[in-house]
Image (cartoon, rainbow, N blue to C red):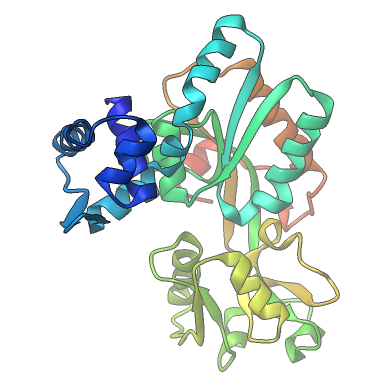
Length: 314
């Protein structure tokens, strides 16, 4: 893909016009227009509506900005990165995590690696599971952490931990008095869920369906973190795993095991056909170390036979 055309696209987005883009790029307006036409032809996407002298992003253009934003933002870094690679000055590790366990597992592991290996340059990003698999497969990152097994054909996964789903309650809720709860105990409760199609929502739906219960979700949100904080603020209850709830204030929320048992697995996600680099192996070891500190029998455990995880039996 033509880097100069990407720069022209970025400049038009920032300036709002070909005139502004030509000024910041020190090119003629026809030259900027040709670069944009080249990019649109290569992508086979209309990126802008031409409204008088203004350039307004199309729906496809907005989607391209979202998906390629990190690449566009880092265009100016390419010469520096190439220079560092040539001189072998920098060891670089690119880590990406699903939001669900980023704060409890990935951030502490990355922080430990950064403290103990100050010569390593680390980037840490958050992506949804779908995006994480796509970006790992496209080799935008060296290692990812999230729910496993994975579906994308260009990535592979190594399970590191399995976690039981539990009910998250606000402190003082009547169900807090019981040490174990059943799905049937949620009848009539204000259950907070993620939006349809998201992984934790699918897991919740499957749990209720297996118990032949119909639950009307009172509140829906886009992330498990927001659902958890809604619980902490007394808006209702939600189903979550302990790793995802590990950073919440225990003075505000309580976790209770939920029957029937349902377990979810977390692990690392790697490019499928690449040899694992030493830095990546090191990151896996730091993740394992962080997980080991959070093991709780019957709640947070090391994975069973990896073959059962790969088959989706966990």
